[in-house]
Image 1: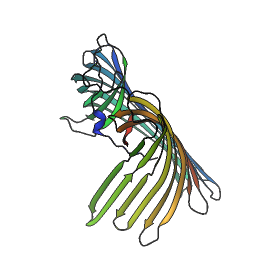
Image 2: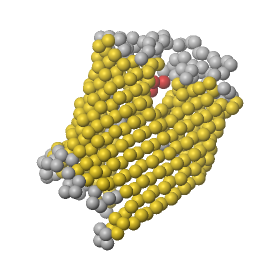
Image 3: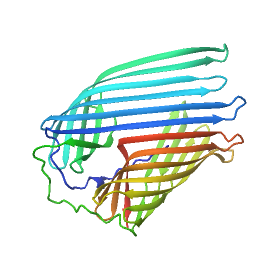
Image 4: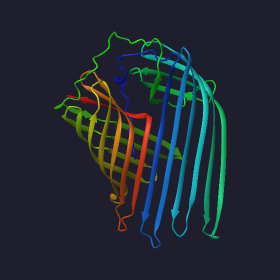
Length: 382
């Protein structure tokens, strides 16, 4: 399952704000991802591999004083692989982490910036059963790793309303501070203060017209990357393009029907020249569930894709095709009169991938992904 993230600065246009960083308020954010994969092959003795995976993280903070927050973060993951064949291979991996942090916020109205830090620790364990084909002996390996380290944080929040905010942040375990990546996600505020101050000036209307029957939408996400390297006086380069143009039509108020065309193209040129192409078609329906500018949505997407591979001088070979469906949900914000910005927060998916060969080996993939660090997209409505 592949995802493309597009973030528009238009998402940060001004609208209503409330006092958010006072005692009595608290914030939450987190991620939950559950995936299972089952591979099956028609080998002489049969072959099955099952690989469940679970990942969870929760961040919670409480404002003890004006603009001062104390927080706790918990994360964990678990992965298990079991091969059922004449030569079984079993392995499992789990990781857990805990950190405490403090932040100081500055700013007014919708905007806040913050800086802070804390200390965190993690523990990892890997158990793997190893089979030696030369001696026909099975053995077990175990690895334990732990780490404790301080960290610093800087970032900012733009509050969308009294409950939701868009947070952009980065952190570092190195001093002086060194950027180690930028993340964007949503935070949810709980509690209330005695003096919530709505900003009434320049507040746009609460109702937008983008989701009325008869309107069309167009959108696209495009990501291009390139890499060049030289090893032992040999030059190699690789290029990747991921795109997903989409068009939709509101057949009724707040009910959108559309289709997306996800495309992935990878090339590598070194000692050999290869090209990979993944082309799909994804019709979808989506329902917007309120009449305010910030509104939840829910929908269903059906996907068909085909994967092919080419290595010079051989002809292109069709490797596999995949059929699947996804229940999804999230938050949408109606920007002005012609844009809809969306944050995808929930995906529940199932798909079947079939190899294009005589054995028709197949794999089932199921997944649940619940997050406040979503994929952002923007549609134009006309």
